[in-house]
Amino acid sequence: MESYVERPPLPELAALVRTVWIQRTGATAYVQRHLPTGGIEIHFPLGGRPQLLGPLTGPVVEVIPAHTTLVGVRFHPGAAPPLPTVLDDLVDERPGLAELWGSPADRLVETMALAATPERALMLLQTHLVREFRTTAGFDPLVGAAVQALMPWNPVDIDSLAGHLGLSASQLRRRCLQTVGLSPKVLQRTLRFQGFLALAQAGATASGRRGADGMAGLAVDTGYADQAHLSRECLRLTGLTPSRLLGGTLDRCACGHDHSASYGPFLATRRHQPLQA
Image (cartoon, rainbow, N blue to C red):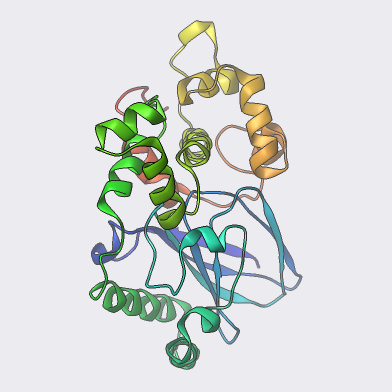
C-alpha cells in the first residue's frame, strides 16, 4: 500500500529544514507531482541512487517504481547543504548526489542501505546533514531575512525590502539567485501559493474580506487579487487548476497525503484568521 508520512526535522536542523518524510509505493508505480516550494529537496530511495531536486519554477512529474521506499528532506528557501555550485545552476534540475558530493555520497548510500528500517535511514540522513552544517554557515543571513519578509500575508515591495536590508534591488536579486535559485519576485509568488496550500491543508476559514468565502476567500487572504488570480498561478506552478489539485475539497490535496508538517512553518507566520475546529 502506498504511504507518505511527513514529520518535523531534528531540532538541530529546524532552522534549515522545513520537513522530512518517508514514502512507500505499493504494488504499482506511483505518479508523483513535485511542486515549487522555494527550496531544494533530497530524495533518497533506499537501495537506489539519491538525487537533489533543485528549486522548481513549475511542476515536475515523476513515476516512482513499485515497491520503492524513499526518505526525503525539504529545505527552507535559501538553505542547502554544502554544494559545489550556486543554486541558480540547479533550477529545475535533478542531479545525482554523487555528482555533487562525490565519494561521501557513495558512502552514505552504503550506510543507509544497511539501516534496519526507513525510520533509521531517515535518522542517518539527518545526522549526516547535521554534521555537514557544522562546517558551513547554512545560509546567507540577509537572504534569510528576505525570505521571512516574503512569506505570505505580508505584502512587501521588493525595492523597499532591498532598501530595508541595505541592498540595492540588483544586489538582492543576485544574492537570491545564488542562494535560493529564484529571484525575489518569483520566490514571493511561490511562497504565496505555498501559503494558500497551507491554509487549504489546515482547513482554514476565510476571513470574509470583500465578502468572499471558500476558495475565493482563502485566495484573497493569501494575497491574491481574486480567485481567478489564484487559478492562473496554480496552473502555472502546478499544471492543474485549484479544484483538480485539491480534489474538489479545501482540506486536503488530491494525492491524499497529509502535508501538515511541511505547511506548519507557513501557518506559524500567520497571526490571524482562525482555523476551523
